Image 1 (spheres, one colour):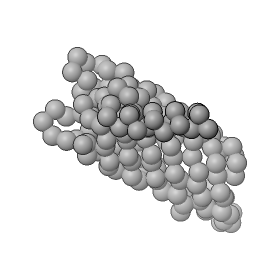
Image 2 (tube, one colour; image 1 turned 30 degrees about the vertical axis):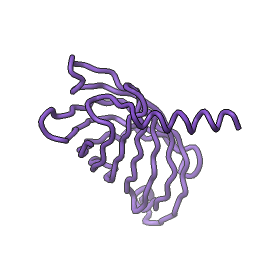
Image 3 (cartoon, one colour; image 1 turned 180 degrees about the vertical axis):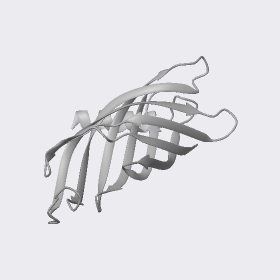
Length: 155
């Protein structure tokens, strides 16, 4: 119970701290996994990101913890890395050569490595990343094709 209280206090006070010239951002993610992205800094260098994507006639919800490191003096350009997990469901219509289809509920782990630029004069951040993942439950496989381009409105 004490750990829960500390976590709640950390999340409450972390809403006042942010890095990389913005606190929150919401936008689109493009790649083989297209969808929506929401990123929020909880400390100057640490952010959480939630992603909802579609692929293979299905969907995935991804949660990531990311560590950001400045590459310039004003914090507009950062590189980041992190880890997290996903839950999703999709059809294997593209994985069977004989035309058969199956549906899978998947749970897995994700990694992320990328770079992001926050424009100084407009509320926009653009990021490019590689997000490999491994399905532990369901269609158990490693996928290294999870890269994407994110364009987010910052506030």
